[in-house]
Length: 228
Image (cartoon, rainbow, N blue to C red; front, side, top):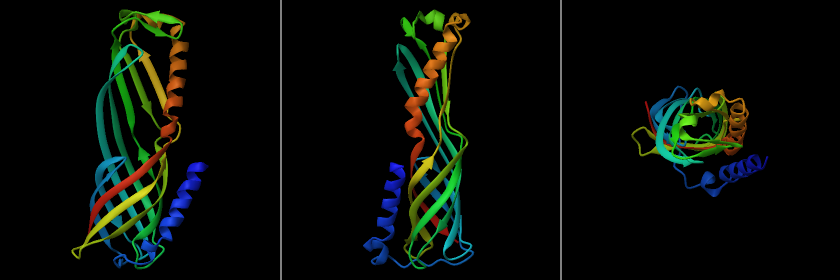
């Protein structure tokens, strides 16, 4: 609720700021306009397509990709991990003013983002009440992901850059990714121990709690489109 209140307050201030009333270049929009370009966002990098069915409404769609690889250690286990941000999104934009670029946007993304890691222990590892050698634990694998459907709400600006058909795009909003899901596994002999599975499930619940702060994901986008 607090995040929603802050978002609404920022929206009101931007839409009623002096910049929204004066000092901006005049923006012209015509029904049937189409634009395409590239965006860089907190969801990744990719192409975007926009279409204006009327002067006050626009539809946009984009695909975003990003890949991050890194090594890290947790509780004596050295992991090779990667984050694969992949999503497809769309928004409906409403422009309150005929000759201004400010807008309000709602939409969503098909979220295929995943976090993966695998590694081996280099020393004795304690998992819950069980002490395990690297040989007993074997290869440890972890995977975290979110629900596929992620609704979005935000504000933004689409305006001209020069007079050659170029448009700048700015979006600021929140993407609700939902509750994360986590799966952990190991392939060593310890997996046959009946005490091991409850400990793994407890560790999965702990990681879910740590990832909950990503449920409301800040969505910021910058891009350039060319209007045909």
